Image 1: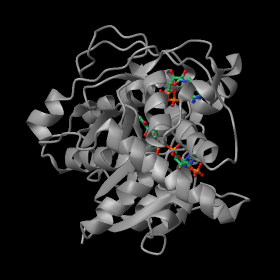
Image 2: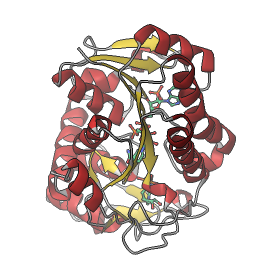
Image 3: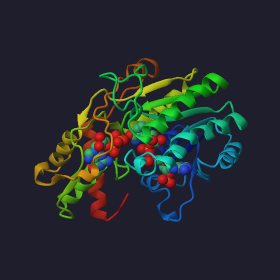
Length: 327
Ligand code: NDP
Ligand code: GDP
């Protein structure tokens, strides 16, 4: 039986990845940071019905000794480093913490592996935010980076450390440059989930208005369930490498919002207004990925269309709103 350790297992991707690996017969472990609100730990794992199938370990990405201890105990064949301060907007409010958790901590994990488990295969959750102010119309593994937020800068550090440890110490370390991916388990602060959550509540008469920021930004949005499969595929390759994971289609926030309102028979114009507080100090206006390397080498392609994604997210949010459940 293969053993996997996931940092960030309580997040969107961690939950879907745990589900995928359990389905493949893995023993799945997760690193979980201590919270005073113990009741909220594992909400996403519970939503997927797998909270009792994974083994959780108390630790923190910023605490090297906890990482060493957990890795030494678990002895994972594969380690997926998904933990991060992952919200771009917050990275301007907490730039130093973002640097520590999203950036430097990648080196903590790499160091822990180098010290106690150098044969473990390593996946780093890199991001299209590293392209920021885009230097090519379609961004591929060869496109130069130009991050536009403390989050993007921190992730770029983590990406290059992953490449460096692969080249310096021969670790089986791969970096997945994933474009935005969403799902019913997406954090409520991200724009897609904010929209579907509000649309469901507006439809049910629980709220009337939705405030948004820059609706002209465009993103290449896929489904998290498809994307975690790409993570796994990367670690099954004989040679570690870096891959762009994307759909190859970019859509504006406005169009996403329109689709969501139309899905429940409402008009966006009747409910949405612009609130400057949701604009950012520096914006990533357009992201559009070129996933051809992933298709050629991993045989991976996005399966879920944006339209299917919107419907799935709205249905989940309608159910939650009706049941009075929050996630
Ligand atoms: P989430 O924000 O949903 O999950 C982040 C996870 O990191 C949570 O489990 C969180 O724990 C954990 N975490 C945060 N700080 C620490 C810490 N100090 N020690 C240990 N764990 C910590 O992110 P996603 O699942 O959406 O994304 C997964 C990864 O992929 C992230 O690294 C993200 O930056 C990256 N990524 C995501 C993309 C996307 O579109 N979703 C696109 C490209 C990259 P807790 O539950 O306690 O908060
Ligand atoms: P990001 O791509 O990781 O920053 O993901 P987000 O979902 O947070 O933001 C995607 C895009 O939506 C960005 O260009 C935001 O500026 C834009 N956006 C517009 N209004 C909002 C809003 O109210 N909340 C968020 N989170 N983003 C918004």
